[in-house]
Length: 267
Ligand code: HPA
Image (cartoon, rainbow, N blue to C red; front, side):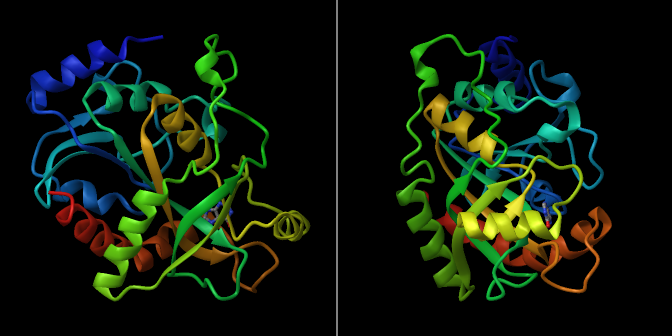
């Protein structure tokens, strides 16, 4: 594996030595916020250990600099499991974030909703998740650190801060359980009924392996979904990647306000 310390040194040479406080991974259609960061945008291709991302609607650059007074690393894109079958695709990038000094990570994604009271355009803070794939990014890890506890994996402290930021902005932030489905095909209506029975409130193709990796690395983590559609079989609208990209901006503006407010309280 690439040495994250070496990649961190490359980044420091371009973005400065000051430690990064927080990482932020942007999901489908949410890339806008990356450009608000006051600092360089480094292509993933220049960073050993970073993923090769090929999904349209993603921006494969690491933006490092100040946002609302906090030194932040914004990941404009992620590699999903469905791209190359690697659940640990984000390990090098997240290990590098840790090597840059960060202790906290916020993940965002686009998701389908299983709850009629969380319609498209709404935001859902993840209270917990279901690793419905049974895949794990730590398979093959040889140290005992692989036995990561996942109780309160979604940080109660970070969640409280995000809830407070949403309330201060007057934005409804729902809360629920996210199920990770491998993709890239969408779910069948029968699979969505199954996931509902299992206790899921939203479904998507990312985030869960990153939460596991974050906890493995000792990063405090929280995640917010932008609901782009009702899950398969729950409405008449046709589900597609085009639709996901078209709908993501509905929630993205609200998400940006929550994140900016959250950052402004981190000083
Ligand atoms: N299913 C899985 N992933 C998604 C969906 C969905 O309905 N919408 C956006 N990402």
